[in-house]
Amino acid sequence: MAFESLSEKLQGVMNKLRGKARITEDDIKEVSREVKLALLEADVNYKIVKDFTAKISEKALGQDVLKSLTPGQQVIKIVHDELVDLLGKEEVPLNISANPPTIIMMAGLQGSGKTTMAAKLANMLRKKGKSPLLVACDIYRPAAIDQLQVLGKQLNIPVFADKESKDVIDISGRALKEANSKLNDVVIVDTAGRLHIDEELMDELKRLKAFLKPHEILLVVDSMTGQDAVTVAQSFDEQLGIDSVALTKLDGDTRGGAALSVKAVTGKPIKFSGTGEKMNDIEVFHPDRMATRILGMGDVLTLIEKAEESFDMEAAEKLEKKLRKQEFTLQDYLDQLKQIKKMGSIKSILGMIGIDPQTIEQAKVDEKQFVRAEAIIQSMTIKEREDPDILNGKRRRRIADGAGTTVQEVNKFIKQYTDTKMMMKSMMSGKGPMKGLMKKVMGEASKLDADNISEEDIKKMTNMNSLKDLRKFMK
Image 1 (cartoon, helix red, strand yellow):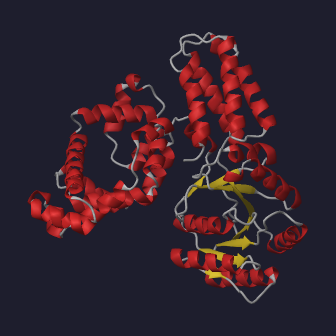
Image 2 (cartoon, helix red, strand yellow):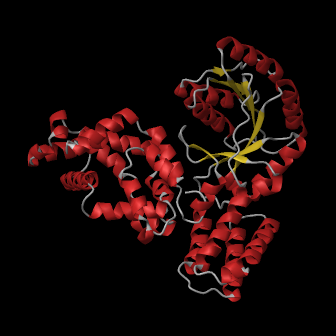
Image 3 (cartoon, helix red, strand yellow):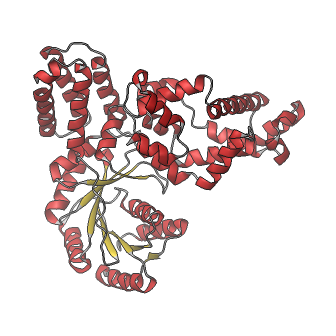
């Protein structure tokens, strides 16, 4: 999970403030000191840390906070707002040209994840109705061209490449003609990278920039390199002139310093983040959502967007009808498991609804349970999936052998399925403990005090029929 260490430390600081009826100047000094240490350990630029904590102290020491009925919450809000400001205030969209094709030039050092990010971006834009063309201009590494072609084939997105040519101007020129003839309205050019910035690399990128006149130069930086990522961004901007930044490997064991420093140092917005190895693991960068995620407040809007993207709405409506009629089968269970897997890991989903990293770690979430569950269901016949009541001892032994597991594991899974079915029944009827749980979860998600949600809010939540309704409520 991105920012795990930083998030854990900042949440620890914030938890000390929650519910405090009175806060002193000494409390605020202690908070500032702990926030400073957490940010420095996350490899955030020292000057940025100093300015950040100074702003928090100045605002938190105001009489409005010290005399507030909820001073702890006020200080948390100040930290949140300053984090949003540090990350870029608001989402900045791609520069899409009114006269197609829009030309996006990818830049970055070798190993930053530039080629993969180019393919992910093409995939994301295609889902938004665009017709992208990927262009392989990393002429020095045949493997990079091969990689782009493999990803393009996997995504069914065209790739223009010429392994014989060593002239990036010629390649990109022919690619633009191809885009115009095939009506591709977005051209994403994957350029050469180096292990470090050198004059030869910059000269080539400058020539390519002058020829292409790109609408967006997107610099890809590796989050795991910490302050080095900021130095790279600064150098590329000074020598080439970049428009925005895409952060990769935010799912890794990164300390988060790059994301928290790059906007403040370069002045260039972060527009995308890579959160995994799959082609769907790319997110539009929302500073406010990232700040709430870091502080453990969740990121329900991004979760809703992932659900909208991953779930087939028509299939979801059919499932809802089945649930209302109590017809939720093991085949439906399998279909839902596959949909959830598309949204990312269980840990990342739990993080988005505001569960802190320590709690998730203590829960010992087993990601392999998906694989086991799929194997068990796929070892069943259609009849068994539709009616698990017929699963006697002999059938369960056969299923266990087919799934490469034990009868005990099969029994455990069937019980989980039965419990899930009961939970679904409770949710659909609006009765029982699930109603109270949903109230609590939605209270957390909407940053409201769950005990003080108005009757009108409850009415809105219980009358929601779709993800769109939930999105409206969250806003």
